[in-house]
Length: 226
Image (cartoon, rainbow, N blue to C red; front, side, top):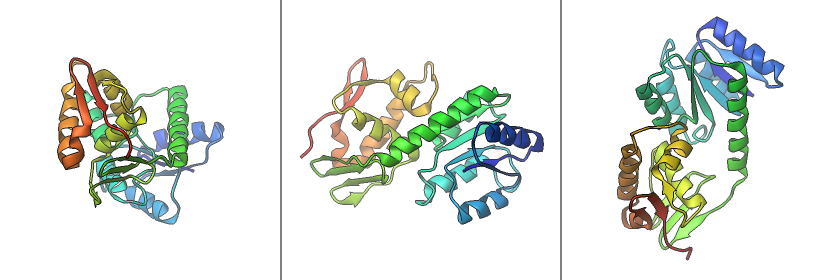
């Protein structure tokens, strides 16, 4: 089931029609209050959110979803008219898995939805755990611990940490990290990665040194499992 929160009835009805014709089950909502009631009754497989909404905006809704353990792992796509780079940064840094702007192509929308659902399925099936000395990471359960203490990370910080551990000892360039985590080209904005790495290291305390800088290239995780 896909939940689509959009107050414009023309767009909402069009997307529902297109997704239904492609074999998806969709419920549309014009107000956040109706959306939240449905979420409390039944969790969807994926959520599509507009930003400019009555009652509360899409970013506020996204933050609530990410801060609730019950909904924190649900894939969320922003579908909005807010198309500046700044808007995209805010949406993706707040935890959106994808960000698509209006006007949009139906085929691209369907392709992105299918990709999100595939990634979500693979993530749910992954029970990999990582341990380095007193550091512990469980991607599927969204748990990070250092010395037995649970570490609170933002959604993007957690995604970045998981990416580095996907291929431990591999060096990820800043451009690759931007593409994989933020989902689009941040031309000239590689400092975004550096800022997130610096914050991540600080939050990981004694384990922060395992994130190593490879000069002139990017970052990797060093060290072996205990």
